[in-house]
Picture 1 (tube, rainbow, N blue to C red):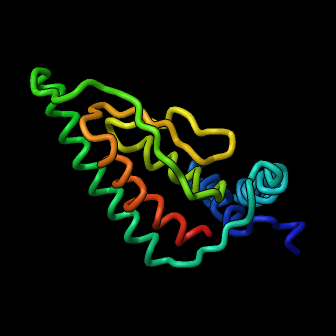
Picture 2 (picture 1 turned 45 degrees about the vertical axis):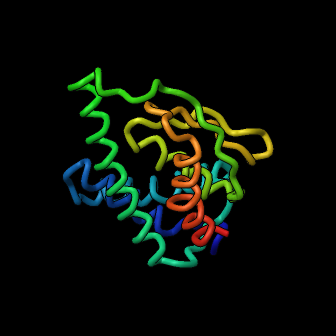
Length: 162
């Protein structure tokens, strides 16, 4: 069964999104939605790093709330810099963050978190996945940035994925 439907939840979601985008529940659209929901996960199965099993759902909720809060805080800091350019404390810079997280799915989520937080961008990861190079809008406290990423993002992701 897993070979025919490698990602059943993804299949259902793809079918529903197809029907919503077409704003039709006709027989033809349902058949096409089911076909796309079945084919896309089958054809892209090799692109997914590995199967994900959720271990701590409450950690996901806490992480999501933390990311939302940090994003709001960062939006305020970036807005301050845009409205008052003279208030910049330090120039932009790069920070090397040592990583313990090795799961490819966890690293992908970490990349998304870093990229949606204004003022930071994922620049590079070392080949052995042990160091993340992060571009920061204000690199006034590199160790504080490292500690924040490790405590607020990496540790919860390790609980979820490893």
